Length: 266
Ligand SMILES: C[S@@+](CC[C@H](N)C(=O)[O-])C[C@H]1O[C@@H](n2cnc3c(N)ncnc32)[C@H](O)[C@@H]1O
Image (tube, rainbow, N blue to C red; front, side, top):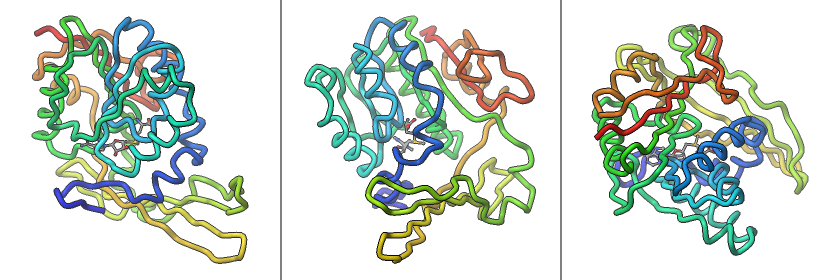
């Protein structure tokens, strides 16, 4: 869905089902990000904090954190979850509605992160450089930036089999008795501009038998390793580490992720 400013925002159902989706709930990145925040010894800013899946555990670990996100529905889900947290955890979290390509928080951070592919929502180089410029302005001297992207599967940028809907989440039962499964598909390849149009399709069956098909559509940018290295260098960020997974193993041909750890040199 495009909002009044022409940006893609997530449909409210996406926020409702986000934390219940096993691929998100079981993602093995919490130890990595909590460890980064502890090591930073100062406040963390997360770009694209969504429902607070990562910022809430960071606050539980005793670290102060600001979560910035553009989506009203994702942020309101985060606020709702925070209400169930102890007072001290709530006090360590600040959420801000804002655009990661254009923000001014009047604070500089020891650590800024862009986890779980939030940077892949930035399709153009102008948006990417604008975001990295904001990152640079918000980092303390020697502050660190962690940028997590997926390592591209070449098949997914041209193989017509991905135009067909494929199941990524087999049906399971939610606590309230609804049954949920999910499929996904690519609806268009844009190789010259390095993005795909994708759909995440939620299939919900209510206890009374009523069935819904809910579609979240958005463009998704893919990156090559050296392109990201050039982007970071253009933005005054020096790469310290490049990992291929959350266990900090090096990037190899089969690594699922590309996790860049960079330092501000300004
Ligand atoms: C896949 S979710 C990740 C959420 C969270 N970091 C996590 O790991 O669960 C990506 C998030 O990026 C946000 N996002 C996308 N484009 C954005 C932008 N230009 N500015 C701020 N947030 C954005 C989306 O609203 C969404 O909440």
